[in-house]
Image (tube, rainbow, N blue to C red; front, side, top):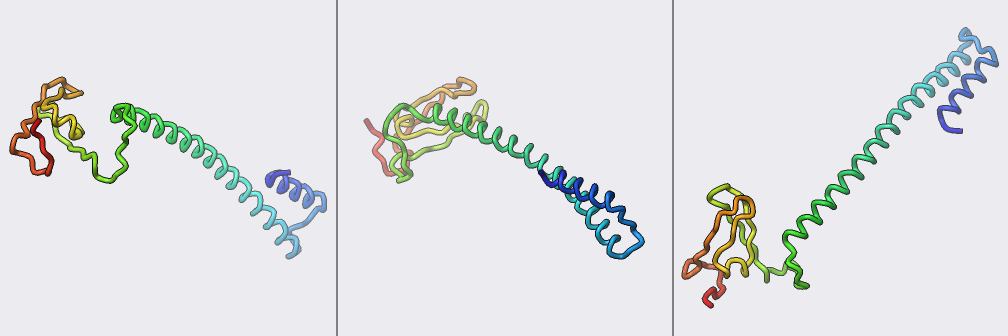
Length: 140
């Protein structure tokens, strides 16, 4: 028996006992039963909202997983060598001068000297001869 059924049972008992609200004890019992009834309705509303939130959280979790998979596909070149945060694989962020797209580059991409913007296709060139203070030798 859930809480709503229990409150309904208490109300039925009170009606069956023919409790008159003229006696102070009866007034108290009837007030408690009424309060329990209101609480059971509020609790039901909270449970309904929580159930809806559970569904929303699950949906958001799936969306985050989808975004994570998408980003892994974009930034994972298939190497077993994954950046473990030790600073060996430095990343650089540049903006496309044509469309403003933020592009993340690694050392290998910079060494190639040029890439196409993934958004607008603009050819971006990088001249690293003497202009880089990163401490790496870019001359091949």
